[in-house]
Length: 327
Image 1: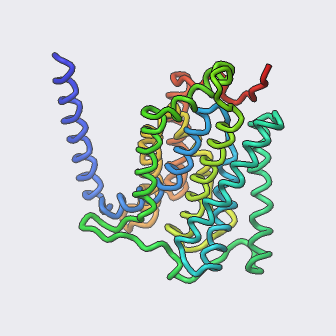
Image 2: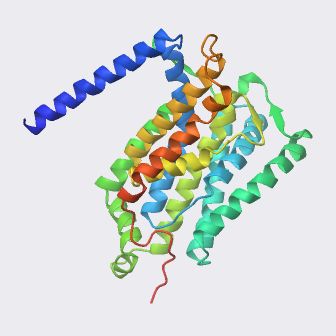
Image 3: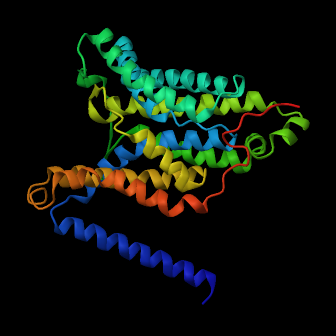
């Protein structure tokens, strides 16, 4: 059997599996279109954070503070949206704050030579206390803030359902990140800085500037994902709004081996499971048969299983997580 035949057979089997799965969903009372809508919404913040982190780690810097960035930029995005009276401005505000946080972590890692894991943990812990403080300081109400519905980012209505334009942007950014890494001089330099920073330095590449650039870009993309949570999905902000999605985004990065398109696919997988859990929990006739807490743990259980299966099979840049010291 030739490789082309095997590939065609694989596509046919995959199409048949998807068709059977969709039929099964419909048979048990779950609406496949509604499930797709929810899955794509859940995918969006994961994809944005994961694609940004892929670029970041390709340059040799690890940011495990994605959870903290999602939390802080969710609040910041709502504040910007209310300040300017526009949800899109809130998304841009989230990108700005996320970029600032990414820049700060990058500067600590590149110039301060700090342990990148500890710095990321510090950001996550800081966000846990800072976000409730922000909620009280900005809106004098702890734990939750609801904003006017007109500040939500409008969705695009199609014959296949309604989708957020931010979702389309996330997909486009994953494609652009892939092209950047594999089709441009800048992308080759980013990979060189993560793999052999000393060689890149000798060739005249500013290792510190490039790592700082990718850290800022990764933080900005994560910030868009954080602002999207309230402004494009939930319609309000709570102090636990990220709900571990920053860590799931890191799982997408590990699954993808730092490849943006694979990270997008992983984000869709986890987002679909998240959407499936939400749909099962509210669908009459289904929620009575499946325990709610079992359904709620599905996204996180899927994360553990996927990471356990691939963690030893992925190769990461040689100097990832290690600061570069010029000799």
